[in-house]
Image 1: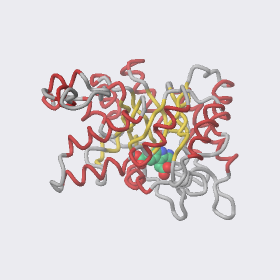
Image 2: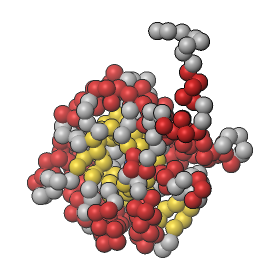
Image 3: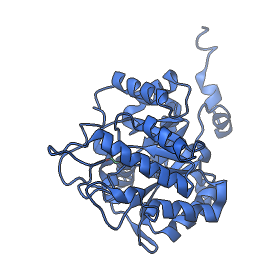
Length: 328
Ligand code: PBG
């Protein structure tokens, strides 16, 4: 390699136009998926204190947001439901009149197929104890019963018109079971984005306020992954690919960029990464204190997830990143 002064790395960084032309990674709206909270029976929307700029939405408000998402060219929207009543099994998850099926039908009526609609599949928003499925006497989630619920959830969301279902419960065998259930119900065209490597993370804190899914007691360390483990993450990714996932997700994003890169290197399936509530809230809080430039920090964070190898980033900042600053 020839050296300085022949080689000058600064040449291609000299002007904004040069930098734009030689950028290796781009923040394109189609690579961004907006997570949305739909609350049964709500009129309008209610802001979430720990996530500035994010709200719980009633069905009408979700429909308006879907229209905005289409206009912004987003890659999609992923829906989370907040039911009016909860029980020990989380039966509200598969209620065809529940918040998520109602929202999906209303979105389809408004925007047709113009928006990719994902539905998160988990029981934690629907159980009165806040865990991801029914519990045994020791308070542990019963894997196979939880999976039966996820299959019913997935079919209900597919019936309502979801393009993609995204099982986030980290139960063993959930992807294969959902694939079988969808196919048996005639939904062989509905895809599965597997939350394959989902870690037991402190960064989900604000989400649990937003989704009203705080656990009565205990934690999720018995099924979500240990933050220390990257080899095990590769195994999870391989297993979900083998079970028939159409795309693989890593979650959270920034603390696990090594896992995002490993997912990209180890599989030819599309890779999604979830820039979660705590990652978003940290930047918003620091920006509100004047400690950093929130807009630039958010763009840099999400760009880094794409650079690590994600094809899609789920982020609460999707709309603000999609709209050029001068249009905001
Ligand atoms: C479970 C689920 C969670 C998140 C997405 N799906 C919470 C959890 O596992 O406790 C977290 C997302 C975020 O923090 O933004 N249904």
